[in-house]
Structures are given as C-alpha cells and as structure tokens.
Length: 281
Image 1 (cartoon, helix red, strand yellow):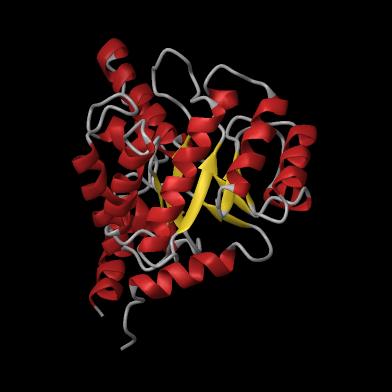
Image 2 (cartoon, helix red, strand yellow; image 1 turned 90 degrees about the vertical axis):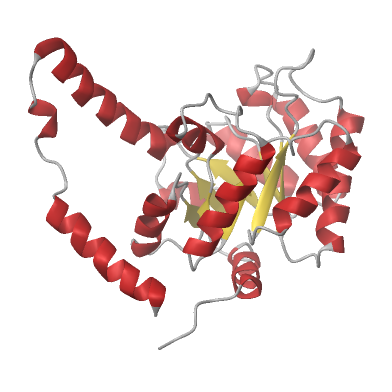
C-alpha cells in the first residue's frame, strides 16, 4: 500500500513539470471529472471558473470567494496530481486584497494559482499596467510568505477581454515576469506567430497556452516552445453541449436519439469502483 502524495509532493511535482518538455493540464469541474482525468494519466489538473460556475447554475465569475475556495479544497483533496487554481482576478482589485486572498487560496492545497489582469466588468477591461504589476507583486509576496512552492501564473487577458493587442499583451507579460510570476499566460492567442512571440517574450519563464480547435496538435504546440497546455472551460462545455442537445431533442421532438453511443453505467461503475479503491488505499 503506497501513501498518497502530500501537498508538498504535489507542489514539487508541479514545479518540475514546468522545467522541461510540454504537458497538458485539462480542466475538470467536479470530483468525478477530476478523478477520471487523473485516471487517463494526466500529470496535473486545473480548475475552470466557467465549468464550476455552470455546474452550480451561475454565470462565469459569479461564485463567491468562499465557494471557490471550498471547490479548490475539495478537488485538491480528491486527487493525487497537482492542481492549479483558476483564481480569476484574485477576487480583489487592490494589491493588499489580492495578497490576502492568495494567502487563503494557498491553504486549500493547490499546487499553483493564476491571477488575471481583467477588471471583471470595471470601467476599463484591463487594470492599468502599474496596478496590474503591483497585483502580481502582491501575489508573489503572499506565495513567498507561504513558502514559495506554489507556482504563480500571471495572465494577460487582452484577447478575451476585448483588447486583442499582442504588443500590449507582451508588454504586460514581460512586466509580470519581472514582478516574479513563475509562468505566463495570454489566453485567446491562437496563431503560430502569436504563440511564438509570447514564448520568446516570456523566456526563460514557461508559457501556458489555451488550446482550441485551431488546427494544432500537442506536438505542434510543444514545438513552438509552449510548456503547458490547458483547455479552460471547453471540456465542461462539451458536456453541456451534449446535455443540451439531448434534452432539447426530448423537449421539442419527443425523441431519445441523443442517448445513442453513451458510455454505459457498467463502464462508469467499473472505473469509479476501482478508483475509489485506489483513493482509499
């Protein structure tokens, strides 16, 4: 019987994953999806604010800090691989508030967390650069006070906040690198030229890329120099899309064709029965 990895083990493993090569970090939204992804052999997982919100009947970003922290704690405790927290904008505008909330986030057992520079509906879509940098510095200091082993990812939200300016995104990422971010992330970029430009600007820091149906394989993305690939809320939306199609077909057409080809109860029961044995061993 082997002991489950400790929080310290998972954090050490997460840092090591960022040192070389390229890994995919998919985004579950509950314990079941997290355990299944772990069972598929993924070496790390990341939460999705959108997927979790939709599962609770909220729009993305509407959950409270306490609800989100409880979610992180539940997923981190249920899994043996490192977990990165999609910590949105730190649930605060001012650096002191970000630092206080990051401190609370670290206690949930996550191995990493990301901080966005999106104002989440403020007068401007992005924080002014000076404030955005101060927020990353505050997050860095909070992580360091907690031991410094949690991987801090800084996100430039330009391309998903309605400011698709690559030059500004790179300016921001470069400043966040200097402010102490361990990993850099510009969600929404999608062309080879954009990806390679971000990787070059971020060096020697690793870059996270948000994958989508852009025509690139994992190998393609790795060849561009990306170290970490996430999928955001896409897997959750895959599940919601299938649910919506099948439910709408029943409601509108009285048909159940959407149930064809489903994974069986037998298969799921087998996986989760065996998985629970591993979890308790």
